[in-house]
Length: 367
Figure 1 (cartoon, helix red, strand yellow):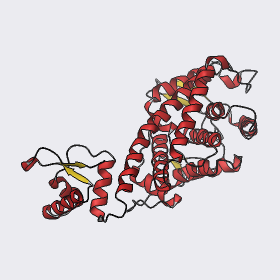
Figure 2 (tube, one colour; figure 1 turned 180 degrees about the vertical axis):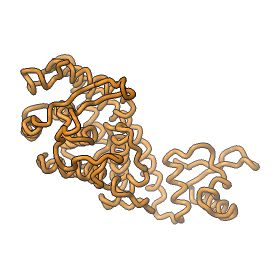
Figure 3 (cartoon, rainbow, N blue to C red; figure 1 turned 45 degrees about the vertical axis):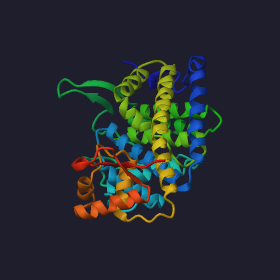
Figure 4 (cartoon, rainbow, N blue to C red; figure 1 turned 60 degrees about the vertical axis):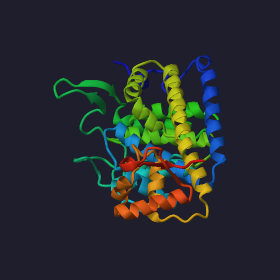
């Protein structure tokens, strides 16, 4: 089996520009339209939209690797690092904080050079205990292949299938030197294609014992932030990759086992980016609705219980809201819940649904 890095022309990637030139232009347009739409938001709404996107990015990037992070902790860590007030915050553990710090460094400091030392710092942040699960690993340094060649495998013991074998450890410095030099040349590639190629190139080298996928996606996010010249993120590529995980691994494997033509990878990446932006448009609809709702209530006094429940409804409360549900969620008495609801109806924030009696329910008053 010959892998792409064993090709004599490596790393001189080639692609057929004509096959995706129209798609590239359309994706750039959608990217610009999304950013233009966000500009019209107020500061708080922009901060909330960015917080949501970064939370998705961190959580889903780990899910791709089969690791579950507590969403509340991820959101809390990001909000704390960015100085965003989102009320009561869950206390994040060291692992969550480390993943968040890596992603924020990649996106907030997108214009700073990507160096070996910076990558080592990201890797150390991902593995603050020096272990991947129960297994000790080399942290903040390239892998050494002391346990054998770096392979991506699946299947039970004795029947494993090797999907990919990375370059030998003694060649990592050479490969990474070439990669980092290319990445820091700002004029050698279209910015969106650079994001696509950077992710492919990095995970092909697979320079660390663990964490290569997450760092590779962080590098892609860094390249996308450079393409937008903005530290704020409003869509999540990792969330979309998580949805398309099987396709992602298939196209990655076929590209790594192919020749130097990466046209199909470029097309896949642009399509995934388009889908991520489409998803972000839907999220921005919710953020915009919330912003207009609270703008309409400017100067209106609401207590903490009311604010919490209204935000839950704005975020997509499932089912019908009744005074009984209000009391349970807000941990208050039925009488207090009823007074809260009546007060919000009088202030124009809620309206009573047509059905009455014991099944009386309430909805947001959005107009």
